[in-house]
Length: 137
Length: 79
Image (cartoon, rainbow over all chains, first blue to last red; front, side, top):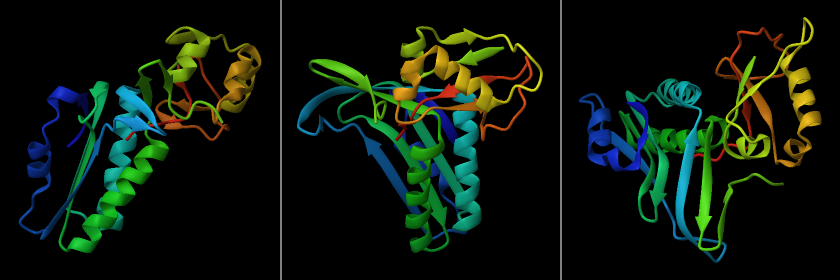
């Protein structure tokens, strides 16, 4: 399952179910949630924008690499688009592997690589304004 | 050709799509990126700015055709 969807449509248990496999003894899951602060400033919400077809293609490449490199059976990645309020889920990654170590490592590789290669942009909203993340040096 | 704009690049250029004419043959994506930076100097102040051509991160060497789908990729911040 590789999807971009509105926050309200993200169902974590469906994503976990989507990677379960009789052949695997481990499912590792990473859930990225919206934190209420950034260097002492109060965050009110995040807004995510994506270049959707390319984001899906880059997410699929990550999933393929996790399957190949960490011998994962199934990999699901679901990322939110649009508004995400404090405490809500921004991204979910689930990886099933025969043994536990590879599932942790594959999941970590997936979230780290997502941040570097997937065309999704985050705007942070504060009580006194907003900005696109990482825009300035 | 159409250039798709997202995030801060959309704010800088003030539109979600930019129409750009390829003025000569053999224009590479690196050439296009330089001319965009010249036209919109704010792009050079970003932490990074790159192009994607037909949905793939560009290395700058691709020769562009009118029908290519090009997108400006400001610093990504998913997750």
